[in-house]
Length: 389
Image (cartoon, rainbow, N blue to C red; front, side, top):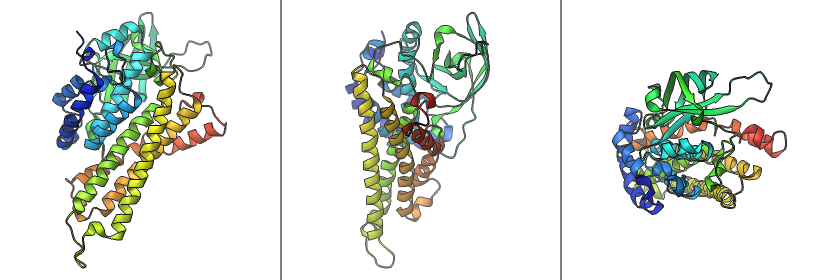
């Protein structure tokens, strides 16, 4: 029996505070190891975090985008690496559930410990055979690959000489058929385990290959809304940075609580400059969070009606999420700036938050070039489908 068939969203909500507390407590351990500890991954899997966006009838929890966002941002507030890895992994599961062949979907989600990790940054050679695609090479930045049961990534469909448009697909293999090369050693988000995954002459059967990011869903489920585009990766980055920003503001106030100015002997937390800086950051956090939630709710409402996310909805979601990432990073820096001399300690919480916030602003789904792509779509220079927003 699939253990997840008995789990509910309410079960996950009840377990989330304890999971977040453990992630917070063990964050430095995960950073040093460069992946989330295996025993904690087991707890996360048993709680159903990877299946929050998988339908009940497929063995998941049947959650909404808001349920996913609340989970990912809560875990990110505790530990950004955990939030990013779990949020990303949950969406990989949803994509497999809606894009892959039913037989493969059934086999994946029959295992209560299953999770999927892939990357869209291939350095591979691909050849087509009767039984599938033979792949040799590697993918970088495969978040969560250490914990995954299936790994792989996006590849270009071999040229068949017909002059058809380029086609990208995802090919997945059981982790036992791949090799993980531990290349992930960043300044921040080190606990995500985003190492290289290496295929050495691996044959991937057709049933484990599906089109993405221009895939057509095989289901009529609400989560089929993920089938086209890459906007949801920005959503992962936004949830991570909103969690980081919330934690940074709380930690700054905690660091200053009870401290007095050495000259005036007045409480530092009551100084006008500190009050103004922290409240301006609170306002920005509130606005960014509200914008992301509004965009996601609008998409989910369309999904509930069986409609795909429209061009304007995807543009708005991408814009809200990219803005949240960059403003979230600024909020962390502002909180660090007022937190006082204790913030400079290498082993301190503020240092880790600053490191973690410095990474996703460079991610392909959230860097400033993304604004160029969004703007081009908005004024008609490009289309959402062509740009894969």
